[in-house]
Image (cartoon, rainbow, N blue to C red; front, side, top):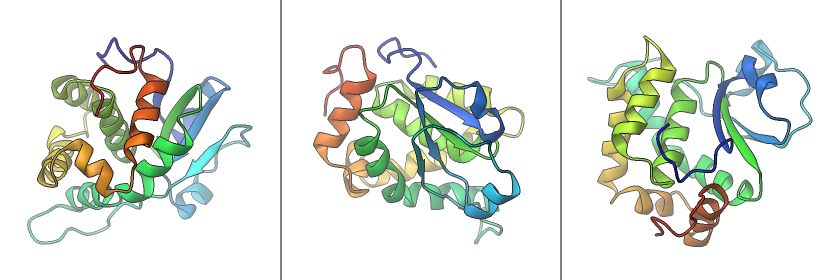
Length: 184
């Protein structure tokens, strides 16, 4: 992703089956549910793993498809993910966000982290679709961005999720080459 301010090799996204390719000092944010983990276990890892399950919706509501409903549910579940990631992982050398395929849930969480680190929206959307492949639709991520904007933007969203200003700034200091650029 295009953001020269992020320290290289510190923020990854991956499918559960590809985690063995990550650097050994890379901590994992595991987004799969317990059922998904039992259906597709990963080899024993000697890494810090933060398990924050985000389930996939099986049915849509109203005009939303099941996947669109899942994305909205995930953005509304940010309070489970972001405070823990920002505050527990700011001391790690590198983190990888991981789900079954490394596409939808992982893509959303990594996109929000990149926006927090100052990556421009165009680059975030372009990378999200590029990495996700043919089945990935930019409008799924855009639905989430609209929802985040509805609560006042990224900083207000993260604060509403329970992130402290200190936690946000600690995370930024840990992953940015110039820690005070784009400070909140």
